[in-house]
Length: 304
Image 1 (cartoon, one colour):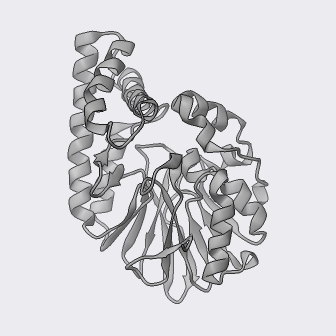
Image 2 (tube, rainbow, N blue to C red):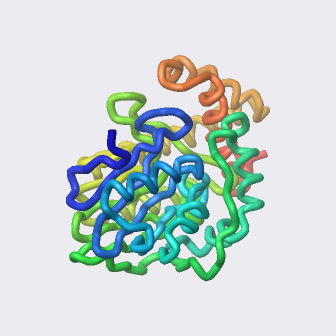
């Protein structure tokens, strides 16, 4: 069984990282180009498999040019330090607001522990990475991978202010991180991902509107896989996000108490998700996503 699978896109390979013990939930990608790039890192617990997969692809570790975590949440950047140590010549392309949390991950780790609760043991560990390894980006930068492949940085706030997605010009594909949610085709379909502490609804809509202006043939989703209906999925997620924020706001006004709001959504979501996720994961995901919206309603809309 190969570590990396080919995709419909030339030179692009995908690794199912079996995130949180689930298939087709989280992945990372590799462009096997003259300047190889790893997009997303998975957790540190999956780095050994990733390195084995690079060997299978015939990519020498010293030839890896770029490591590209789209943002610093640990399911996307948890393996950054381990990959950087193994790939000594690779530069880490990271949003300028996120890079400090990989240079010193102590606050990030504590924040993730609070957000994911009982799921944290899946996340592994992170070590500090030298600031000299980073290329800190803001959006608009373009990185040449060779053979006419290019990664353009797309500033993508909403899910997190430090999210930098990547548009590849030749394949007309977007590495969209969490900007279009979690989409498990043939399984759960779409799931929202609106975590604390910096979910911002209006900024997210602006990000999705920006994506609609790109020439897209593919979405390269971290959660999960290569999808060939980019505009339809963007529109569907935009609708779901709008409905989700409105529903959380209604329940907050009705129930007042944050704990009651979270319990309501846990009871609502459990019958829909129980065949796919453990009760602990459902509770963790629901509480995290509700809390993100509640904080947004308090900080941005002034709800108490």
